[in-house]
Image (cartoon, rainbow, N blue to C red; front, side, top):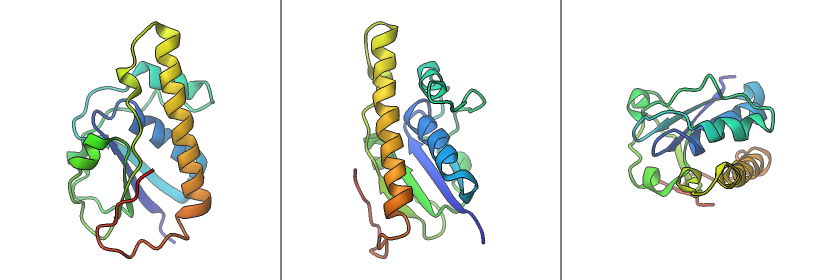
Amino acid sequence: MAKEQVLILCTANSARSQMGEGLMRHMAGDTIDVYSAGTKATKVNPYAIEAMAEIGIDITSHTSKSQDQFLSKEFDFVITVCDNANKNCPRFPGSGIHLHWGFPDPAAAEGDHDEILASFRTVRNALQERIRTWLDEEKDTTDYSAPNLKLSL
């Protein structure tokens, strides 16, 4: 049986989508091939790396990727994790389902190291809970048959 293909998309592919990719890869094991990208590529945010390391997930080898490099790939699910990416999400080939799970941008946080890291932890924890719920309760039981269905958090 082929693995499901999932793309997690945000604006810069620096924080939310990177943490989502790391979390989903860790939580789904070898049942899903998961990728992340941004509407524009930048670099992986060091706070995202630090927040993930705290829970034992290493994303230091991740790189920021543009959604353009995936436009010819078929995905079972494209999950946008920010409103900008949701609004600007391109159509990918095939009949993949587009889900929208909006999270605040932790990279917009201000303050000292601990205050900024706290924002990343909050988003990481929310992503982890949302992914857990989707993997455990929703992915195989939700009727995605409605055309152009978008689900929100």
